[in-house]
Length: 590
Image (cartoon, rainbow, N blue to C red; front, side, top):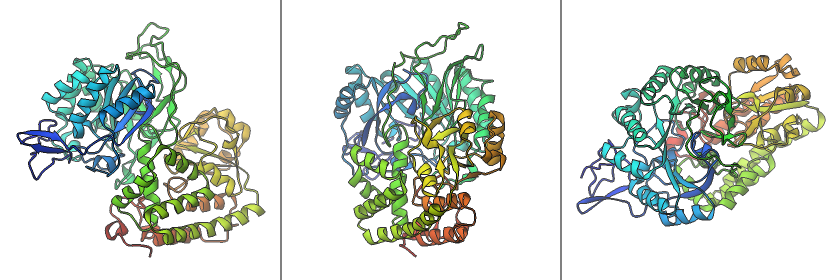
């Protein structure tokens, strides 16, 4: 029987569960897999979904399940999107409703995997939510049939539509046939009164596709908010597909020729997350980066009319106080938590995702994840984190081997730091004006290496940091500046920003600004390589070791390849994009 939920029109029979792997044939009708349920339910601020013009700062319950009808390269939530079952305890729609009411959420939103994969379950959840006075929305690729979109529009209040590009070729790269159903459905939802915001990926070299998306949306309405997602290469996606923050900023600015409200994500420190009045150009409200695909308001937003009289199209009343998610919770940060567990297991010779999920089941609770969130922020406690993961995986000996390797290098650096002053240092992400949280691993690496992180003087907290004023950098005059290995910016752009903002610290004058290699300072045991790199920059020539040789030793011993053979991207657990030998063989330590 042909599935009518999405345009893939899969044939569901006794042998096939379709592209999503979540449907079954029951007599003469297609049903949801009865074992399917919601895998998580966490309270979040709506801006982390992200939705920017819908009940600003509203507290919603984020839920997710498994399965997707797309197969996108570099998917940020691939683990959830490509699995039918993870073997975790699940929540029924009734339990989700109960949780939302208990936590004081104003609505429920389905994210991470596509609701096309659990349409019947989502419909049941939505109808029960409405009975309880809750708002309902989702993030979706919106590849539904016309029949389904008509039904969907009856029970959802809002939707973030993730557009992959404009051309059919781009959509074929995601495993489907055409982009046309998506734009048809966006117009249908908008005409039927659903609040729609659109996110589109900016892949390097695909700028014209993004512009064409903006033109097409403008034909529906110029007031539809467009979220430009700077592509972050996870999974096997190559880093060459990642545009610089500066390139995405230029593209974002050009899109205002077509749409009134365009925002740039995945770009810490950018000013293009703010809402501007399209009539007079005044800033209406300000936001800052809040993790991958997320943002947060810097102050409450309740007045949607500019002083010039122009009304900003916003649905609902903004919350007086923003909800702040803890630890790994909120938006797409949970997918990064998966990556951090996987990162340790990969170094222990266990690259298989199935084994990672077995370990995850052992630590999957809000309390355990908060404990882990604290453990990974300090070099010494991270060793205990390795021990925990190794114990859950039943490979204690390999865990001790990794700990021993890291500990020996830590002792060397500790000795050098005790005998030398590394001077003051500043740690930022993507922009000189986006400071990393004082307690994060990166700043603790600086202090462990014998430097003095000026970030420790800051009193604020964000995820993973927050915007600061140039005066803070000038007043504290760091000798060295480090740029995060997670979300970076080319050095020529960075120096240009320092000049633009009037930053005149010694680090700028003496050209002592260093971009850390991807995932060498957070999220992976590779932080030991970042620590060596940082110590070498703070104490040039004092370590007495060959850094390049140390890096190759680590990669060969724990990944089975030399660093010179790797093509790193932004993944925490993968040493290289594409296929790498140990991923295929699943072998253990060399």
